[in-house]
Amino acid sequence: MNPARVRPPRAADLPAWAALRAALWPEVDPELLASEASDLLHAVDGGVFVAEADGQLVGIAEASLRHDYVNGTASSPVGFIEAWYVAPGWRGRGVGRALLRAVEAWTRGLGCTELASDALLDNSASHAAHRACGFEETERVVYFRKRVG
Image (cartoon, rainbow, N blue to C red):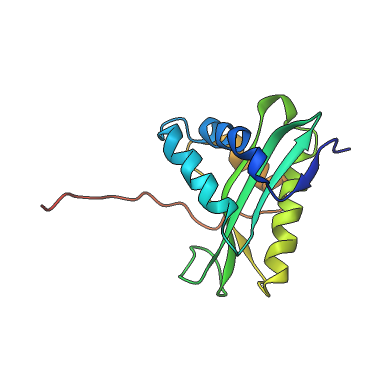
């Protein structure tokens, strides 16, 4: 049973939301992550949800609508999970699934028939969470870059 309530974020959630984003992406400047959260809060297209339990935020899901090609999908547009994170003490309690259900409903509401996501190659915990929630792996890829200027 999921003890968390999933809802869209509010302005008062910004500090805790930014902290969860920083836990998900510890290599990124926390001020940038907080600024992005603020931008998402004021975006008109939705797709952002928080999970609240015991008066605190314990998880986030941020999704977008992608019109470009998304690896492994057959339609366009598709919903795409940009961020999906549950605080370690709340994992295994249905919080991630509840967040995912909110994103799925948002995606269906936009007329999409597919929801996609990605994870780093070495993030086996994320791979397992995706599989447990019904995702199928479609491909693996390594990106390269070269400076030319």
